[in-house]
Length: 274
Ligand code: KIV
Image 1 (cartoon, rainbow, N blue to C red):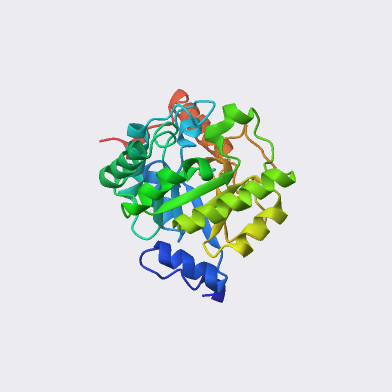
Image 2: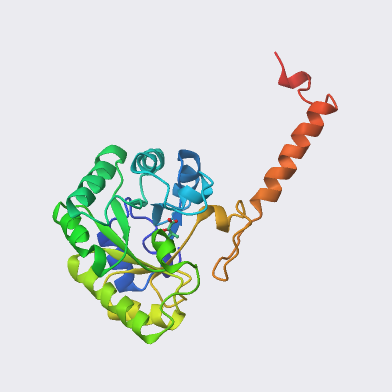
C-alpha cells in the first residue's frame, strides 16, 4: 500500500480521521450516493466520505434545481445509503427551507436526519447568515460540514451557476465565512466553483479539511456528483467535471441487446427457463 493510502484500513472514517488525513497530507475522496446499490459499490472501493447530496433533487427526481427536495425525501435517500455503508463517513445535506430561517427548526431537521437515517453528519450551505443554526446543531452534538462558494440552494438569489468569489469583496467574505464555520466547530467545509488560488489559500489558513468541487488542486480533498463522473448524466459539463466513464452509453448498449434478443427470440434460451 502506498504511503498516500495510509488511512485505507481504518474501520470507520470519523471526523477525527479526516482531521488526521489533513494533518498528514493525505487527500480525502468524497462522492455522492442516493441509494443502497450505488452506496454498496462505493463502500467496496475505500471512498472516505459519501455525501447524500440534495443534488438528488436533480439526478434522482429530475428537478432543475436542488430546491424542491424535501426533508422526508432526503431521509429516505440517506437511510438507503446508510444500510450499505460501514466504513465511509455518511454526510447528508439539510435541504432548502429546513434550516435557514430558524435555528430551532434547523436543529429539529438535523435531529430527524440523524435519528431516522442513521447518518454520521449533516451539511449546510452558507456562512454568517446561518451561523445561529450551525451553532445550535453543533451544540446538540451533531457534526456539521459547511458549504461555501457556489451554493446551489441560493441559485435564485444569484441567478447563475458561474464561478463564485472572483472579486475581492466576495473572496474576502468567503474567507471570513470559512473562519467563522471553523470557529463554530464545523469538521470540514465544501468549497464549490471558486478560483483555485482562493481554494488553496483557505485550505492553508484553516485547520479543518476543505473539500473542493471546482476549487482547484490545493484543497484537502475532492467531491463530485457520482452520476456526473460516471457519465450517467450527460447534459451537465462544467470544466471541473472529469468523466471517468460513459455509463449511459453502456446501459443503452445493454438494453438494446436485451430488446434485440427478445424480438429475435434469442432470450430466454433453453438454459434460462424451467
Ligand atoms: O448536493 C450535492 O451533491 C453537493 C455537492 C455538489 C458537493 O452539495
